[in-house]
Image (cartoon, rainbow, N blue to C red; front, side, top):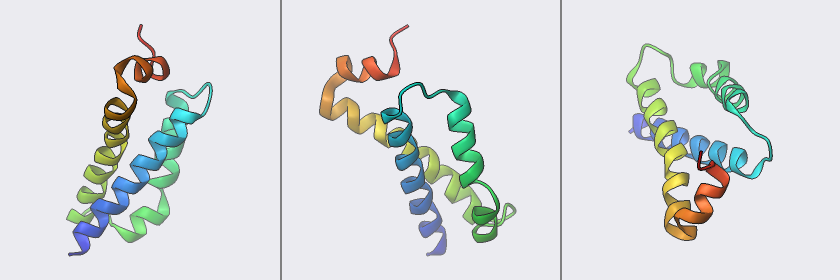
Amino acid sequence: MFSSGAFWFGAVVGFITYRTLRHKSGSGISDIATVIGAVGGGAVLALFPADTTRFDYYGVGLAVGFFLYLAISLLLIGTKRTSEFLGDD
């Protein structure tokens, strides 16, 4: 049961991270690294120790939440507008 909580906590953090980076102008990989570093810091490791499956569920949830925002934006606003903020290089 607690592992499920770790998954959903990670999903929410990932979703909010992607949303924040999407709406911030001029964001880059350093911003993502900063957010993940802050979120993956001491508080998360205290809640979900690295040698447990709870930390694994948190990491999976973080990835799911991060890419869920992309999937929702593709569904709601379409590929043309989504490629505007992702870049189509």
